Image (cartoon, rainbow, N blue to C red; front, side):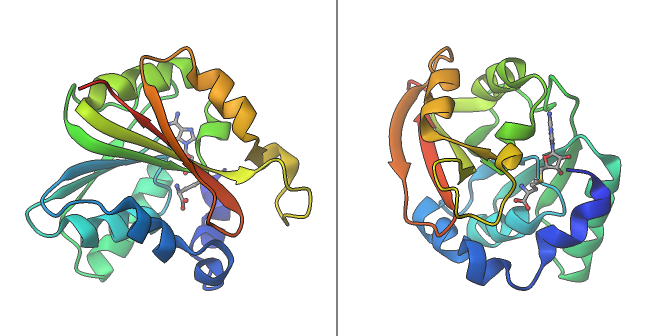
Length: 188
Ligand SMILES: C[S@@+](CC[C@H](N)C(=O)[O-])C[C@H]1O[C@@H](n2cnc3c(N)ncnc32)[C@H](O)[C@@H]1O
């Protein structure tokens, strides 16, 4: 998604349409944790993660578009949030240090990755042992969603692609209105 469409990520109806608050309650991110929001865009989810981890925690907000990171910085500053660290990634490398994170979140990002295998390999390295990778995608199984099919994935598709990664599938959560969330854990 181009930064030119960034306004859509911050639309006021998003809470009602996608129930992000429910997603973050379910994530139950511990206070003080270091987490990453990969494909952070304008930081819609980074800001929620920042509130969850609190001042002793940190959110590494990765994107490959500098313009998105600029918007993310501006919004974080405007709302007085100081624990989000923008990170400029590349198509194959999110630019995170090894074993830096307890949780890595990708919301509506995996389907956009041009080199998904390489990116996920790097994210596995960036997780601490026992850490969680959570991937949220619009449900490709549901033709009634007001989302173009190109921007959706089926659970089966994601399971197949993730099967080659050194992660254990843990759960699939289907309580969001438009998306599913899949949890993978790095062996501890
Ligand atoms: C649809 S937006 C979702 C933004 C945010 N996660 C949200 O839910 O508001 C997808 C974002 O992923 C980013 N992206 C795509 N490929 C990426 C990659 N390889 N590394 C980091 N970010 C990427 C895009 O630049 C864009 O900002």
